Image 1 (cartoon, helix red, strand yellow):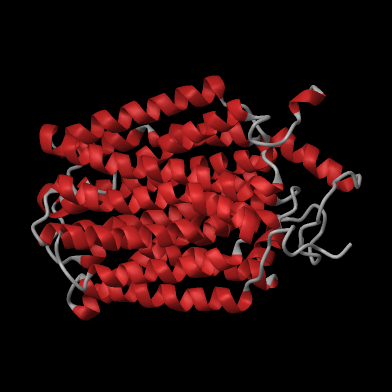
Image 2 (cartoon, one colour):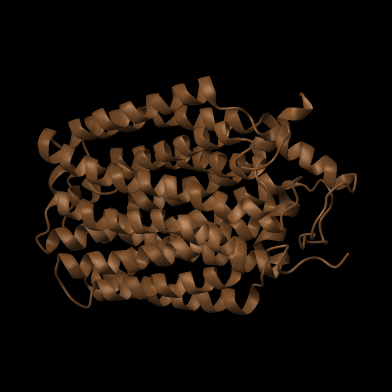
Length: 431
């Protein structure tokens, strides 16, 4: 490859950076089409009996375990066959989803479609994030992931609103079919025609580090791992051997309890309080809009003040927003509660990933991000099981809200005690 191509930074790679932002927007559209209409109409459209809490959460459990596993696979696979091929495989897996929803005779088909959604999200969202980190500089990681997650969750929020209106106008199945096929086929075409593989950028960065050609503060890379580690070595390092990375992974897992709650029980909770589908879309959309939009600020903020404090405060603020949801009623209050949770997510979401990227060597960064995302998205499955059990034990949806709030406060405390600042400029490795 010509040397002038291997430049780093958003400006130097603006064309591909924007292509990847568009990709993650479409990734957000794909998951967003499943988050308003399907839970709210689970009883009337897909035959889920009322108060069947575990059956209702089954599709999110399936999504979490599948997406978590595919995140793990995607990171390792991308270091062997490249980022672009993994991205394309993710879009190919998504093609049957809207067709399965349209023809679904029962809730089991929705669960099966969500398995494919987990494959799609695990492969595509992982690659949009990893590809941007390949081509940007260490001081742009917070901004890079903030923009990535802004674009994805903007797509999620917009899709929830659009599909709410389409379901009201065309019917749930027809609306989701038209929206889903348009988004997925557009994304696959753009991937094949315009996206470049960024693995050469990661390899060039690794070569410069190996040759001692880097300047500036050194990251606190873990020392108890080989230069070219096996999958098991990276997994063990991320999961328990390095307490910093383990603290980040457990926080990532628990914060997904919130998103599982918003996905499964927010629509049910609001629908039972007489809120219309379009208005449910707006309330859930406010959560997504604040989460996504605030990351313009929170990702860049962590490039200046560090990752650790935003991550911890984000866990606690998000838990407070969940608590607020059940304390009063009305569109204004529920919208405010959703906004508080969204802002907490904006503080923690890009910066947990940025912290992982800070102290992951480029030789195994793709694997490290994949394993972090494995634990994080496993939180969908574990959280959804916890939500169902909490709702059963308490006899109401509201009990699930308290389960999530307590989990967020406790996990934030663990992160505060075991984690540390990872930004190389603020906490560099001693040379």
